[in-house]
Length: 169
Image 1 (cartoon, rainbow, N blue to C red):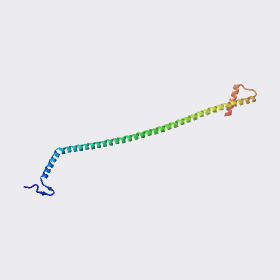
Image 2: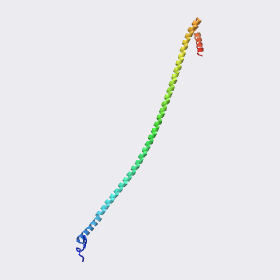
Image 3: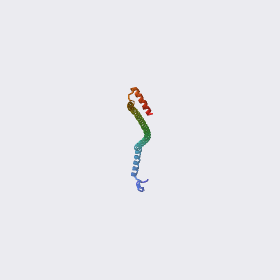
Image 4: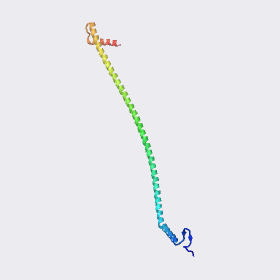
């Protein structure tokens, strides 16, 4: 028979306490394996699944954010294009307005010059008529002095006008 207390094994001595502790350890492993380990594994798997879901959600959120960023960049580009078109239209409209204003100003200037020419012609005609009448009176007075008697009004007038026409030519 082997004595359990007598066998020296170095720092470990084989004795009843060691066997009881070993059996208790195995029982504890059995209890842990039977009731605790499955729960820990289930909790770990749940945590792992939860982390995976969060990673999937984060990836999906990143993809959504990337899609929104691209969409926003597209909208910004479209807004820039529209702004460019609006600016071009505004420039063309401004140029057209300036051109129309210049044309109106030219037309107004032409109209004013034409009106001034008509006024000048009218005034010139009035001046010529006034000079004719004064000349007629002067010539009529001179003729009366030269001829000595007066002519009748109608003959007198015709003679004066004929003389003025000869002078103008």
